[in-house]
Length: 212
Image (cartoon, rainbow, N blue to C red; front, side, top):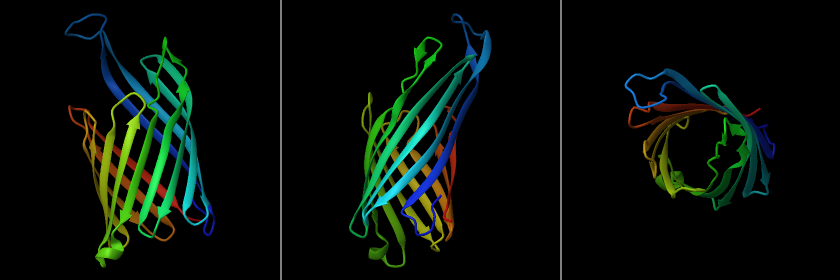
């Protein structure tokens, strides 16, 4: 949410993931003893502020919850990010995500996927004239994993509808993503779809931006 003419903006998120019918076994057997579920939740509030005409800085503290079988754990984390406008068409950005921790889930603590990411976005709209096209790329480095790369493009249709597609490298069970957005003067709605391999299903996300 952003107030018109303001130099800052607020936002919040609710991320929820659930997996049911996981078989439980005490030893190798064809028939499981029972089935159980796993649930994950993230609640966060974000604040971003402009510093001059070129620099934006933001922070997102968040509450985390997980439940696996009958065991539960809580935790807290924070994300930091910044964006710098380098000229009219080029934006550079960086972020540190998931700095925090969880308490014990049964006997062990879940380790948060702390990562650093840097990226850039270039707007080709002025160069192409009647076509609105944005190209973007990110390099991600999780704390204990290999580097991952994200690239994507956004094409504007009738100045209100955005079509998006992207590719991700470094993941075992996903590589492409698709999305669409509707932009009006006072609000924007975004939807993204990511298919997973190996019968993991898919991921769908919705977001809403409002200017008051």
